Amino acid sequence: MKTEDRENSLNDFIAGARSAIPIFIGYFTTSVAFGILALSSGLTPFEAVLFSMTNLTGAAQFMAINLISSGAVIGEIVVSVFLMNLRYFIMSASLARKLGLKNNIDKAVISFGVTDEVFSVASLKSGAVSDSFMYGLQLTAWTGWAAGTLAGVTMGSFLPRTLQDAMSGALFALFAALLVPEIKKGYRALFLSVSAGVLNTMLYYMWHISAGWSIVISMLAVTAAGAALFRNEESSVEQGVEEAG
Image 1 (spheres, rainbow, N blue to C red):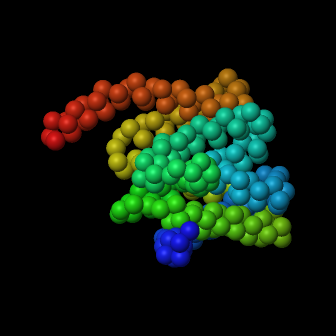
Image 2: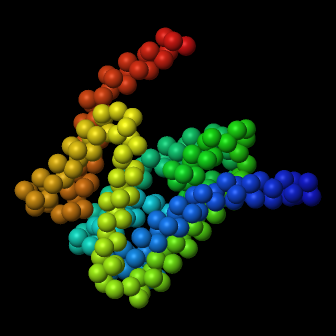
């Protein structure tokens, strides 16, 4: 690699790292709560930190911890996390066009670090996005999540049990933060979320289906129903856009 190319790569990496500073702060504070909650759910400090280092899935990790606390088996947890993270396939496919990566190793590493916030920063960046920029962006974000989890398990090792249990409220706060902006966009998110909640409650309390599979069934059923119910509405919107263009 030429000296000029190295300098450009370094500058892009630094630019990506700087762009990720707000993400680092947000991830660090959230993952502190995750680390404490993971300890109260029975995970060891090593397991909790390893979980964050190898997953970087945010809401799905909180859901997995909740399922672990409820006694769900490994299959239920894996399927639930997989379904919740399906959106990352779409995000990665979208970024792939903008990045134009040719090296399969770069594709694998960068796809691992795609999160909602990382996707937003990279998508909104004007012009081409280099792999060096993505590495700086994602490494900083990943460090915030892993370091916050480490801080959380460290704090959780000496915090009273009552305070550790109180951190379970962070799970509901996180999902509320994800849901409320979507509800503001229209009634569909509210309808689907309430439907999923009602169905999950019925499956768990009335038909005594385990917590993990009740979540999986609820997600699949409501997603399928939503796709069928709102298909015509989406088609009308797309047709209107095409006519306007």
